[in-house]
Image 1 (cartoon, rainbow over the protein chains, first blue to last red):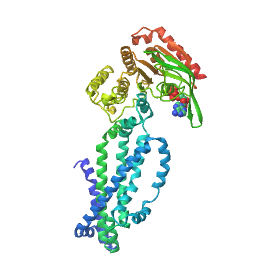
Image 2 (tube, rainbow over the protein chains, first blue to last red):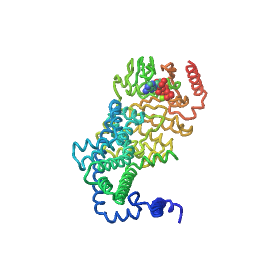
Image 3 (cartoon, chains in turn orange, red):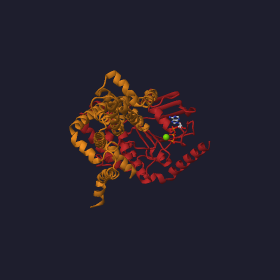
Image 4 (cartoon, rainbow over the protein chains, first blue to last red):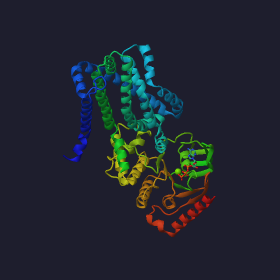
Length: 257
Length: 259
Ligand SMILES: Nc1ncnc2c1ncn2[C@@H]1O[C@H](COP(=O)(O)OP(=O)(O)OP(=O)(O)O)[C@@H](O)[C@H]1O
Ligand SMILES: [Mg+2]
């Protein structure tokens, strides 16, 4: 087996090793299932409860994606506005920093009061927590156009809109797609936090329920479901980033060479 | 074509206004090749921005083509020390960029694209980049990028070409080669050129008139006609008359640098 093959297998080897050690520790020291269930217990719970796990995973998935979609639309729009002019940038930036520093967990009860228990607070929490990095990245991409390039275009009679369309927006795209990875992770956190506090569906809700019934293997099964979902969503956005802005990676690669 | 009368310009610096130019008067005729030399920081780039209408003079009048400049001149081709090509566009698409902005090309860009691409290919051939149109900028060397940047500044056949140290980052051979490219294109199309440079040989070889600026706040302290016959050959750089002018200019700048 050559070394690149080993390298591609390495993550799997580590994951398997982790579970094996976990299992051994639980069995050797007789750790109670209520404290820390062994992987075999978790696996049994997954097999037993696969239907509710799947159903609730799906709820978590779509609420996350809905919140994320809102964050993308709004973040892109606000990023373009903020990056458009220095005045707007200066004016809005402190407001946004202030907003972003509020822990979003604190907002969930308010959302529940407004919209009741259910998916809407989860979607909104996901949205509120994840739009900020998109705004900042898009605005940064626009604001850092090389001044000389802007001079070239303006001397040709380009309007601000022309400069944005021809240079600013394409230039901001790598920043935008890069921020999606961060945003989707945050949106996921937002959804699960909200589900844990106030919901009647979703993995967060399922875990909270299972926890109050002391069904620890099911709680951990929920955790595994979250990990799988999180990894899949991250991988999807990372793939999208590669696809959409390959030029930025290649340009950097050649600059470094 | 270009006239500045008693122009001064102050930037709003962070610690108070910075006077970049003061009492600058210069005029460049239509189809003339003018070079501007001077110590670093004397306001040469500022002068370029004034002529193209990117900044407004604090006092004085800037006129291009007989009309006072009140905003961007909407037609000048510009090139800088950095090629500033867009990395997501191919070389051809980079060079087409001005045609997507300047009228009358802009209005018929879609329908005439094939014709414009052919134009780009002609231009690429003249600067020695034949066959590189489909490459991306990062696949090109610095010198090749600079050639592409020169093409971009020329594609819309501007009446006015503004060059701010375009050859400063190149090796000596590439630089001389591009001097000849610029010389030939200019000889053919006879647009007005303002070339800012630190290379006095470059200025004397290419230009009809060399303007010398003082240290900041910049002012034109001398205008020197260079009357070698055209078309000039690189050999002229080794004439005694040529080296004498270069020497003279050098001394002048050394003096204004001392203050
Ligand atoms: N945006 C700005 N704000 C404040 N001061 C500026 C600004 N741009 C230029 N200056 C100042 O104006 C002066 C002239 O600048 P300019 O860029 O025109 O010089 P230059 O002759 O092109 O220099 P170089 O030969 O190094 O390119 C400099 O002293 C600089 O510090
Ligand atoms: Mg300069």
